[in-house]
Image (tube, rainbow, N blue to C red; front, side, top):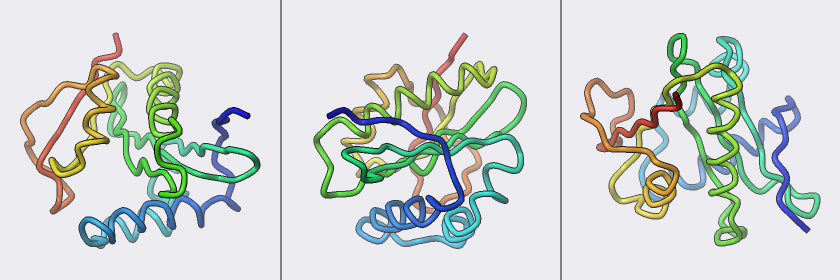
Length: 153
Protein backbone atom coordinates (compact mmCIF):
# COMPACT_ATOMS: atom_id res chain seq x y z
CA UNK A 1 0.00 0.00 0.00
CA UNK A 2 1.36 3.40 -0.91
CA UNK A 3 1.20 6.82 0.63
CA UNK A 4 -1.33 9.12 -1.04
CA UNK A 5 -1.31 12.93 -0.94
CA UNK A 6 -4.71 14.55 -0.45
CA UNK A 7 -5.95 18.14 -0.30
CA UNK A 8 -7.04 19.98 2.83
CA UNK A 9 -10.58 19.48 4.08
CA UNK A 10 -11.83 21.26 7.23
CA UNK A 11 -12.26 17.94 9.04
CA UNK A 12 -8.50 17.31 8.68
CA UNK A 13 -7.49 20.50 10.55
CA UNK A 14 -6.98 18.61 13.86
CA UNK A 15 -4.24 16.51 12.21
CA UNK A 16 -2.52 19.63 10.90
CA UNK A 17 -2.52 21.02 14.43
CA UNK A 18 -1.65 17.78 16.25
CA UNK A 19 1.30 16.68 14.08
CA UNK A 20 2.90 20.13 14.09
CA UNK A 21 2.38 20.79 17.79
CA UNK A 22 3.93 17.38 18.55
CA UNK A 23 7.30 18.17 16.97
CA UNK A 24 7.28 21.79 18.11
CA UNK A 25 6.70 20.73 21.72
CA UNK A 26 9.31 17.97 21.47
CA UNK A 27 12.11 20.20 20.17
CA UNK A 28 11.11 23.80 20.86
CA UNK A 29 7.99 25.59 22.01
CA UNK A 30 4.74 26.47 20.25
CA UNK A 31 5.12 30.16 19.49
CA UNK A 32 2.08 32.47 19.24
CA UNK A 33 2.37 32.51 15.42
CA UNK A 34 2.40 28.70 15.35
CA UNK A 35 -0.67 28.51 17.57
CA UNK A 36 -2.55 30.93 15.32
CA UNK A 37 -1.60 29.18 12.06
CA UNK A 38 -2.28 25.67 13.38
CA UNK A 39 -5.62 26.53 14.95
CA UNK A 40 -6.78 28.77 12.06
CA UNK A 41 -5.31 27.36 8.84
CA UNK A 42 -8.17 28.60 6.65
CA UNK A 43 -7.45 32.18 7.76
CA UNK A 44 -3.65 31.91 8.09
CA UNK A 45 -2.80 29.90 4.96
CA UNK A 46 -5.70 29.13 2.64
CA UNK A 47 -7.39 32.56 2.48
CA UNK A 48 -4.46 34.19 0.67
CA UNK A 49 -4.03 31.42 -1.90
CA UNK A 50 -1.96 28.96 0.11
CA UNK A 51 -2.52 25.22 0.18
CA UNK A 52 -2.37 22.44 2.75
CA UNK A 53 -1.81 18.78 1.91
CA UNK A 54 -1.94 15.55 3.89
CA UNK A 55 -0.26 12.17 3.57
CA UNK A 56 -2.65 9.24 3.88
CA UNK A 57 -1.40 5.71 4.49
CA UNK A 58 -3.61 2.65 4.95
CA UNK A 59 -6.61 4.91 5.64
CA UNK A 60 -4.76 6.98 8.27
CA UNK A 61 -3.68 10.59 8.01
CA UNK A 62 0.03 10.45 8.87
CA UNK A 63 1.53 13.78 7.82
CA UNK A 64 0.98 17.26 6.48
CA UNK A 65 2.65 20.18 4.71
CA UNK A 66 1.57 23.68 3.73
CA UNK A 67 2.42 26.17 1.01
CA UNK A 68 1.92 29.70 2.32
CA UNK A 69 1.58 32.47 -0.27
CA UNK A 70 4.27 35.11 0.32
CA UNK A 71 3.93 37.25 -2.81
CA UNK A 72 3.31 36.52 -6.49
CA UNK A 73 5.63 33.71 -7.55
CA UNK A 74 6.90 32.97 -4.03
CA UNK A 75 5.53 30.45 -1.54
CA UNK A 76 6.83 29.34 1.84
CA UNK A 77 7.02 25.61 2.42
CA UNK A 78 5.88 25.40 6.04
CA UNK A 79 4.35 23.23 8.74
CA UNK A 80 5.68 19.94 7.38
CA UNK A 81 5.19 17.20 9.96
CA UNK A 82 4.82 13.43 10.03
CA UNK A 83 3.30 11.44 12.88
CA UNK A 84 6.25 9.92 14.78
CA UNK A 85 4.75 6.40 14.44
CA UNK A 86 5.28 6.70 10.67
CA UNK A 87 8.78 8.15 10.52
CA UNK A 88 11.06 6.32 8.11
CA UNK A 89 8.50 5.19 5.50
CA UNK A 90 9.10 8.10 3.13
CA UNK A 91 6.14 10.33 4.00
CA UNK A 92 8.32 13.41 4.60
CA UNK A 93 10.08 13.01 1.26
CA UNK A 94 6.76 12.49 -0.53
CA UNK A 95 5.17 15.52 1.14
CA UNK A 96 8.17 17.65 0.19
CA UNK A 97 8.33 16.49 -3.44
CA UNK A 98 4.57 16.85 -3.85
CA UNK A 99 4.62 20.36 -2.35
CA UNK A 100 7.34 21.36 -4.83
CA UNK A 101 5.22 20.08 -7.75
CA UNK A 102 2.09 21.79 -6.40
CA UNK A 103 4.02 25.06 -6.00
CA UNK A 104 5.03 24.86 -9.67
CA UNK A 105 1.36 24.31 -10.61
CA UNK A 106 0.50 27.42 -8.60
CA UNK A 107 2.95 29.42 -10.73
CA UNK A 108 5.68 29.70 -8.12
CA UNK A 109 9.20 30.42 -9.30
CA UNK A 110 10.66 30.26 -5.80
CA UNK A 111 10.01 28.29 -2.62
CA UNK A 112 11.44 29.42 0.70
CA UNK A 113 11.45 27.78 4.10
CA UNK A 114 12.65 28.46 7.62
CA UNK A 115 14.01 25.72 9.81
CA UNK A 116 16.33 25.06 12.71
CA UNK A 117 19.82 23.60 12.42
CA UNK A 118 18.98 20.92 15.02
CA UNK A 119 16.41 19.39 12.63
CA UNK A 120 19.02 17.60 10.52
CA UNK A 121 16.73 14.91 9.02
CA UNK A 122 14.43 17.62 7.62
CA UNK A 123 17.39 19.68 6.36
CA UNK A 124 18.77 16.58 4.62
CA UNK A 125 15.42 16.12 2.82
CA UNK A 126 15.42 19.76 1.73
CA UNK A 127 18.98 19.51 0.38
CA UNK A 128 18.09 16.35 -1.57
CA UNK A 129 15.37 18.34 -3.34
CA UNK A 130 17.77 21.14 -4.22
CA UNK A 131 17.07 23.72 -1.51
CA UNK A 132 20.06 25.98 -0.82
CA UNK A 133 20.89 27.88 2.35
CA UNK A 134 20.48 31.65 2.02
CA UNK A 135 20.93 34.52 4.51
CA UNK A 136 18.32 34.40 7.26
CA UNK A 137 17.10 38.01 7.01
CA UNK A 138 13.91 38.93 8.86
CA UNK A 139 12.34 35.86 10.39
CA UNK A 140 8.99 35.39 12.11
CA UNK A 141 9.94 32.33 14.19
CA UNK A 142 12.22 32.67 17.23
CA UNK A 143 13.55 29.12 16.72
CA UNK A 144 14.52 29.59 13.06
CA UNK A 145 18.24 29.87 12.39
CA UNK A 146 18.24 28.55 8.81
CA UNK A 147 16.53 29.91 5.70
CA UNK A 148 16.54 27.91 2.50
CA UNK A 149 15.26 28.55 -1.01
CA UNK A 150 14.57 26.55 -4.11
CA UNK A 151 14.38 28.24 -7.50
CA UNK A 152 11.71 26.51 -9.59
CA UNK A 153 12.22 28.20 -12.97
